Amino acid sequence: MPSYELSLLLRILSKPELVSSLKRTAETISDHGGVLRQFTSLGTSPLPFKMRAHNQIHREGTYFVMNFDIPSSSLDTLRDELHRDIDLVRFLVSKEEGLTSKPFECTLEEELQPPAYRKDVQKMIEEGQKQVRRQGGYNRNTPGFDYYPFQR
Picture (cartoon, helix red, strand yellow):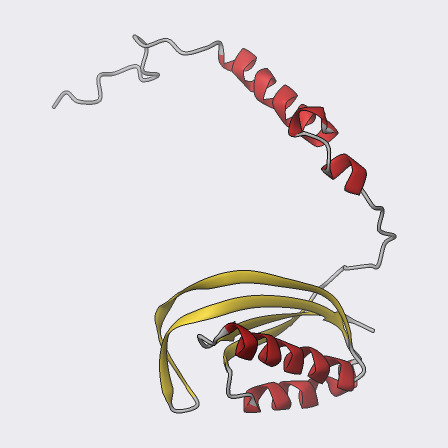
């Protein structure tokens, strides 16, 4: 089954209504033979411009991203059902190219360590120190130009 990403923009709802709307969307995916892999909330924010959906004007919305696998044959019916959902202002289904299901390794024990002991944080600190060494520090009297930029 191909992998897809569903970007959702929901209208402002109370928490129980939001949960029921997201459950309804996830059940719609599973009813069409899809498997939900990941679910991410991007938060609530003002929209870049006012949007009209289902005879209402929206100026704020809640953003979500769902990653799922679904057969290509049932994608059109999924889109049709999502168009009819009155809580969705906009949505976009896009195919994730080159995504293979690789084995997932759990790094919970490493994530629970303090940041100073994590390998990835130590690597970032080393890279930052290398960049400071290459730059040679800060010299206040040399702006980096071979001319005075504020002269007319």
